[in-house]
Length: 478
Ligand SMILES: Nc1ncnc2c1ncn2[C@@H]1O[C@H](COP(=O)(O)OP(=O)(O)OP(=O)(O)O)[C@@H](O)[C@H]1O
Ligand SMILES: [Mg+2]
Image (cartoon, rainbow, N blue to C red; front, side, top):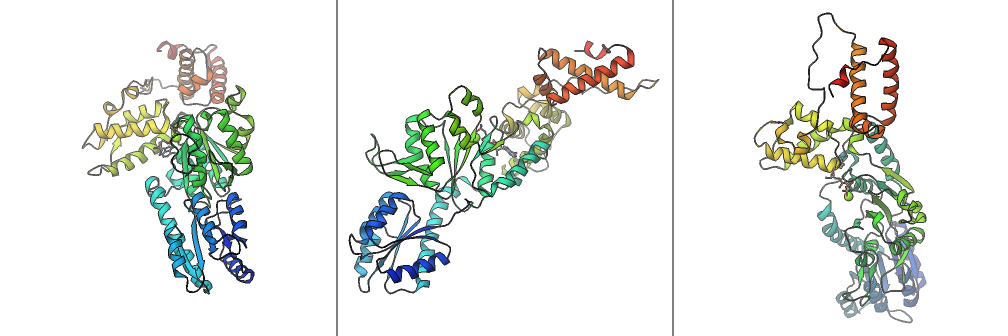
């Protein structure tokens, strides 16, 4: 399942030479398929996106040139190496002109072949690194790039460690800004496929009509505007990872096609009847509740199960408020270092931090990152960022009782029941504000719903035991 070998097609009619080369290359770690004729090679090219084709130019039926042309036509990224007879350098030159990566002249030594192959593979790696890696992946993502120490995050890290090494399909769900893309990239970079591409496609950002061609590729003339044959993202992700973002927005027709890819690892380009096979790990993400979309019929159930092999749910920030100071620190350092001149040692005042920790963060970590960036910009040159530099929504956060210092009365007080009363009062206020909705009330208080219910029961019992009836003083301040 985790195989990311280089797939090589060897076309040679001389059986003894072919077997010797195939043996050698297999020993070098390549996945080798053999063909004795151009016709056989063409059939295999129809079926599979090989990485490398090595073909003799002189073959019994059609010549190796047909193999070269067919391979390059279909797979613009394929490496083709041609083998020519002694004294036919002219053929080799022609082949290079039509797109062959290199050539070998018979008879050749096996280490000569090895050298030519490594050279061609290195060139291709460079090409793909230039095109993809440099553009999107300046830094290497490790799990350590994902900040969090709360319980939900520790559970998440453990899950990521467990599944990163596999090729299983993963469905990441979570509200906007919870780090779905970050996690997808981390999974890829911790997988055996990390040396291959991570190709991302956002299903909601591309118009329905273009999405199919974008995903599966198209042949020339498949539709108006299809002036060339183009490989799709699936093919580009061969042996690597495909990140399907916002998969919940896919149309029913595309859902059916995607299902087939997941089941059979096979698809056709738009306008083409020939199937293409790929070895791709799929990581999908959604901020919609896919199970719910299945219920309403907007998402195929069979596809849902195919995608949901390993569900990874990212908790909203308000469910792990204890990570907020850590994240704030992380963004202060990261954004501060990017500034000109760099700013170090900046911190939020306690009053500002209290608001950061109280706020509901509907935009989750992205919103937090933006708030930190804004705050840095609004307090140039100072080491401490205060409330005034926070966005209005955060300045408006109510801090209820927290700000007031409690003065210990002369006669002292029973601390347990005093705190119990404050807790009870806050819970009652939260319930009043949310019209009795316990889940929302719990959210307001940064508690789990079950914790809130437990607390409420325990507090009411304790208060009744202590003084016969719940103490009204705290509620009165609402
Ligand atoms: N745990 C984390 N630690 C550090 N940074 C994080 C974390 N989670 C998310 N981020 C940062 O927050 C921002 C939003 O993350 P990302 O784009 O992955 O979210 P998303 O879930 O894909 O959002 P959307 O649903 O809007 O596409 C990014 O800049 C990302 O680097
Ligand atoms: Mg995203």
